[in-house]
Image: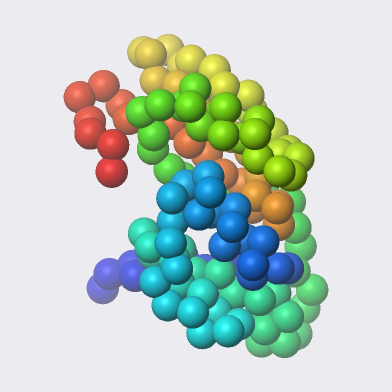
Length: 126
């Protein structure tokens, strides 16, 4: 068995596509109206579809999971976040961990927690 994608429910597909394109460089690989697959395997789905499927309301900012990225230039990402046209809600500002790895946590416009770290010593960024 192999994990193929990660799906997150979003209020506004256009806003979510813009966020992930401008800040992470993810591009649309497949656009199916209510479902959009981005490069790197992230799938955005209109929350109305997800709510209809589950029969329940989507709970934002639940901190039950996170999207994890690696980036060598976290300071550059911080500058992108500052320049982004919408306010960014931070869970953890840029800091250095024991051993030298850097970490930053923030939320996307729909409340999905995102963690970005520099690669661990000796690892290449994916």
